[in-house]
Amino acid sequence: MGGGSKAMSLAVSPGATYQAIVDKGESLCTESLVKIFALSTFAGCFIGFGALLSLTIGGSILPAVASHGSGLQTWVYAALFPVNLLFILLSGSILYTGATFTTPSAVIEGKAKWHKSVIVIVVSWLGNMVGGWGFAIFTDLCGLNDGAVAEYVVKISISKVTKGWGKIFLRGIGCNWLVCMAVFLCTMAQDMTGKYVGIFFPISTFVACGFEHYPANAYALPLAVLALQKDEYNTPEGPGFGTMLWENLIPCSLGNLVAGVIIMSMGNSFFFGKLKTCPCLALGKKKEPTAEPTAAEPTPQQQAPPAQAPTAQPQLPAMPAGSQPDWTKSDSGFARTVSC
Image (cartoon, rainbow, N blue to C red):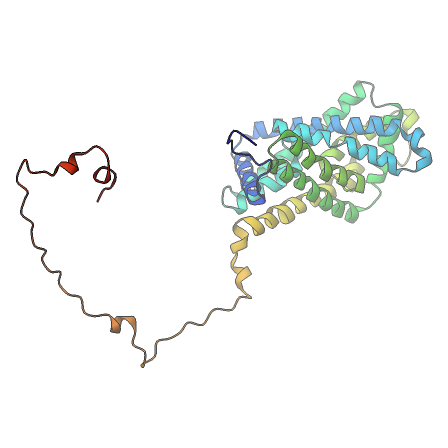
């Protein structure tokens, strides 16, 4: 490229990305709880927008793709869902899942206290719940929780509360591993296109694979409970609020927490931060033997000659006034550019 301008990279290094994650976590730990809660509530609503888009399109195309199996419907649902994380990350809103990565990273690197991180995580969990439930009520009041949307979300909710605690917990780990990777890649990218690409692939992957995301479930499950109150969608297999919490939201939240704190925070600190210098990592290293001086080989102190007193330098006679050489008066040349 001409013009001599310096090209700018469209992505920073993984180490610099982790440092930005640490800085974000430090910033969150110093924010007011009111702001944390408000940003988390907004994030819960943004999750609702993306999930409703996926439910609307995914539910509507079922008759057209039924002959091709459920895979195509799942792919469409997964491909549309990532729009919500684009809203969240670029608007500065806070997801519980992201907070389990950013704030523990700041703690590990000595930029924040553990109790501050715990408070941010708990408040963001509550805010996402309020936002998700609130947006589910809003969706129902809009008359959008009917027809194919209601049928699809009831079907999804039954699947989410019948898999058992252990599977939901493990799926929560897999989910937030990918969600935090989306946060990492979005932070790494320096342009809008790169950010969305970094968000799209991890998020669509976790949705298509069937992993469990607490903020998304905090919208979809209440929406299903509201649909089950209507006679045309009511089924004995449908979950109530208690079943929804115990069979999905709690184990899912714990799995998300494990992935954010242990896999992503501690893992990236091991690669790029303080944990790579942890003393336990040096247990397997052998110390280099140091050579001891022998009697036949005098030490450097024995070889060094005794210090001598400095000799006096002869004093040069002072130059009489008016006898300065003409070459030192020049405004250019050696006498001007060299200082002694």
